[in-house]
Length: 80
Image (cartoon, rainbow, N blue to C red; front, side, top):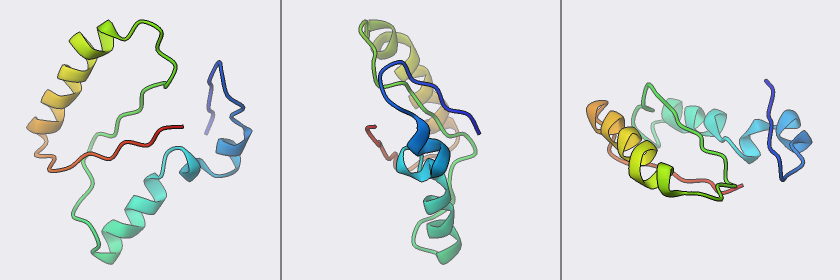
């Protein structure tokens, strides 16, 4: 797995992706019955976004629509 970011050192993510993208942890929770099924699609957005208008006007509504179509009940946000 490869990670790229202009403003942070990503070597820690190469060692353990769960510090920024806790998919393995949530898959464990799913197997243990602590949560329901994970959605088929998972999303990631780079944190440094100087012009957030396209994100709020286009990208986020599209993501929300796709999540709704997949029957997502909850979303988790992890700032890095």
